[in-house]
Length: 446
Ligand code: PLP
Image (tube, rainbow, N blue to C red; front, side, top):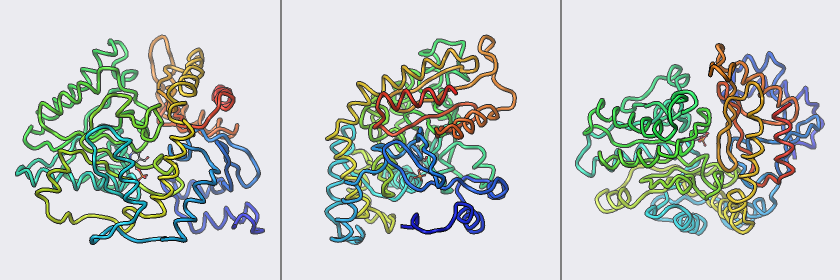
């Protein structure tokens, strides 16, 4: 392994700065700061850097290492599959056993009515596939003018040009432009947009923004609505109890497709296999990634509901779409073993009945802190929104500054959190014990 090399940390950092352009990074800023922290190994919920520092990973990598680090069964599943069949594609009338079995198991685990899986390599690719399927569906249904997909401000669906257009991250739109055919509404952010209102009434009002947008775009031009069950990368926006039922009512009223992006919420994070089960949502299309393999292999899928699948299959002919690594056998084998671990070790059930409620309860104790405005979340996903004046409900003027300071401080103290503006986000591995949770909460408070 490269970790056995005798390069010093400084040498690694120098080479990295000289040759490696990191995602979502100020390239020059990183070099000026002396380079990136070098992570060398991991076990359970802990990472270790090249200096031997132990860090509690409150983000499960990028919201993905659901079963925690160091699971040898996943390495063994990959090794066995690589020896037997390291690669073959699923194009042109061939298939492989891992892809077939994974499709079957995903259909079994996901909500009723999603009976087909289309594989991809990442969440961004899965969402590109979603766009292709939505457009194809409406063309085959004789309504090709239905092109517009409505997403939400600060929604995140990936980083390709199509996925970022679906998403509502203004900084990404500003840098790259946005493709035609996308519109966005505000997310149901009660703490920021509805604080003085009854949360249930606010949930209905926020869902009404979808209907307003459909009217503005023109009901005959709208193809679909996309949202995450809980908005993650956009600042942990937890929906009021009334929101999702009302969103579904609006989608049905106008006959538009509902896409529920489960890339973060899937595979146990909210205490059920999928966020759609937690919030009682019936999606037409459901992109999955991240926790599907706990990040041990890059893999994603789009679960396709019967309404779309029936049309694509019965009327579609060849669908000119797919990726070299769609249904990659090694990635599928690892995903299957990951699903087995989540199920057989009762991890999803434990998040629902034990560790999730404990995590949420302990985090809510932070509400007594002078700048903690709201703690929200469910299961193993949470946001802590910081605010300048709680009594007056006044936010910080320099948005994001205090959040960044708090995040950097916790990083120095051995806990990885994320800061989205002034909301601290936590999405740890699902295997945390009560002791790990106690350690995490103490480190957040520091
Ligand atoms: N969808 C959601 C909800 C995400 O949070 C992400 C990534 O964070 C993506 C899609 C994109 O996934 P990927 O980074 O694998 O392309």
